[in-house]
Image (cartoon, rainbow, N blue to C red; front, side):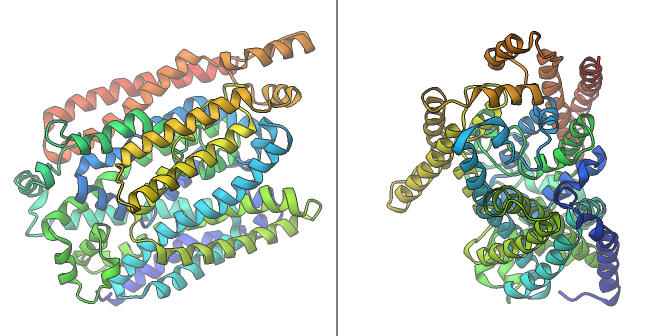
Amino acid sequence: MHLQIIDWVIVGATLVICFFPALFFGKRAGKSTSEFFVSGRSVPWWLAGLSMVATTFSSDTPNLVTDIVRRNGVAGNWVWWAFVLTGVATVFFYARLWRRSNVMTDLEFYEIRYSGKAASFVRGFRAIYLGFFFNCIIMATVNLAACKIAAILFGLQPWQTLLLVGTLNVIFATHSGLWGVLVIDMIQFFIKMTAVIAAAYFALQLPQIGGLTGLVDKLSAVKGPNGLNFLDILPDFTNNWDIAIAVFIMPIAVQWWAVWYPGAEPGGGSYIAQRMLASKSEKDSLGAVLFFNVAHYVLRPWPWILVGLCSIIVYPQLSDIQKAFPNLNPNLLGHDIAYPAMLKFLPVGFIGLMVGGLIAANSSTILTHLNWGASYLVHDLYRRFLKKDATEKHYVLAGRYSTVLLFVCSSALVFALSSAKDAFDIILQIGAGTGLLYLVRWFWWRVNAWSEVVAMISSFIVSIVLLILNRNGIYISTHAGLLITIAFTTICWVLTAYLGPQTDKKVLIEFYKKVRPFGPGWSHIKAEVAASEGEEIKIRENIPLALVGWVTGCAVIWSALFTVGNFLYGRLNYAFILLAVFVVSGIVLIRTINKLWSDNNK
């Protein structure tokens, strides 16, 4: 594919618009680690929310959704749509708790919640485990997508792509800190959305597609494996029971609360926690997470889905993609590459916008992961355990060196992966069983540091055992393996909560006084505080009202998502019913939030 001069001009303009403002934050970011990693805790809700949305919209996301659609139809997206339950729970139960903790990273939480050497060990271990190991896997999937896109569009080799995106991302991540990342994210989000909407529009205009009506008619007549209907928003529970279990029942019933996945952690964590901690108030923290979830699940998916559906008609088989791009490296061939393959049909000018948008998509995610990972390595490992008495400028410099290290290691890992979906499955499997712990630890005093250690080790061991069994001919399905891992891990950490060394009561009391967690799980500590200080800490959280907010929030997001889908399909009866559900649930949600906030501030 060859870009015209106007395309290159648009690419250049896009990069200047995105990155130039970030140059002005270098001096501010260099003042302290607080400025470099959490923007001085002064970020408004809308900027924090936009940054979360932009971060989760990476260059591999359209590829991942296209892969899902081509394999399991639109209903396959329930593997990530189910995380709505996690995201909205964070809004109503965890966002304010995170902000009250006043930590710089979510790993610092361990040493205000737990006590002893175990708390320090968990903090240091997870700084490496998440900040380095998991973080490098995630960045590798993002850069793998960039390599596939560049191979399709420009015929570049992976190392060439990594060199180009690495130079851009490392320079800005090391220079501008989180402030620069936030500003870049804000601008990039609008550019990326414009680009993907344009890609969907021009894909629908292809003669072999024939617009939305043609797409629906053609795919209604096409059946996938086992009679799969690609257009179904819910899976077929009669003919494809195995698929229904894997893509709907497991995610809705188990996955959302039991699995740790970056950006959708039960209880919030990683860069979501970083944005909450950077917010200027509890209200901004709550607003940011709510805005993120609405935008993440409602505004973005359908442009990707439409391109994925169009690709089924244009490239029914992977061999059709190889035929259309004869110079494509066969090692890069997969269903996920169908998305960049569809970009060949963009007209002059829009190709430049898409290239600029894809660079923006890659950068917004990589910049966040570099800054977030560096915050773990510096604040939770280097500063905490290796060099405790250096200046702020020294730690900022260490953060910049860590940024470079993370990108180099994640780039090397690109060559070990084959698709974004593979990495998605690996992360879900290794994180299985730990999610419930991350939900419960805020509301049950018995959870201790050793529970965290046991949960991590047990989930990892089971994952490795399952991998060995599969490689030796003993096949265990993905959802069965997930259930086994969750059951074993949960039993292990719950037993440890009862039988393991307990957290020092002074630490629990200080945590309770600072964070003010609610519910019966802290009644024991609440009584201790009342006995020692002569009065109870007043907690005005309304649990039933928060549950109403959670349910209506999920209803708002899902009804809005499927209202859009049914309008696109031309199914107006369903669309208007869902629109009514959206309006009613939206009114209840707004009133619930206002009531919660007024009660909390009396």
